[in-house]
Length: 135
Image (cartoon, rainbow, N blue to C red; front, top):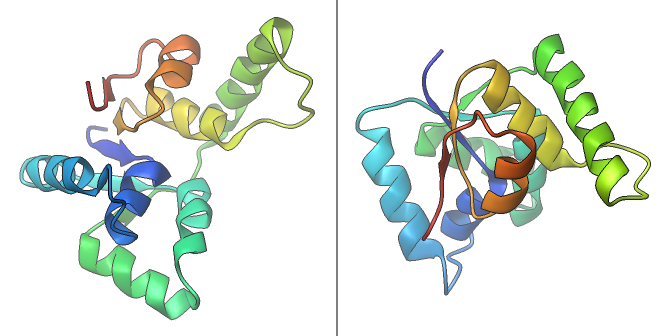
């Protein structure tokens, strides 16, 4: 599968008109939308919901933006758990996988590029994923 998984920080930049990042994020999404499919998943959907008061408003914004929802395959859930174990061995005391591990694992399993402003974590734990981020 080819396409672009769009991290919540990029979407929220645009939806909430972030004063620092909205321009870059909107331009990048517009550029990629011309030649590839833009995807979100249930984790990203949940994260972007914070910018809306009603689910109907969120649904309208997602639909208007052209994002397509991907479900999480078991292979990506498994990979997320393995990446989280690696994270725990090096850093953390967190007891459950962070959302970024689910997002990165799905991009890896489905061979999707990922657009995000959180480049370092994804590159560390999902080195096969093509990351698109501000320089």
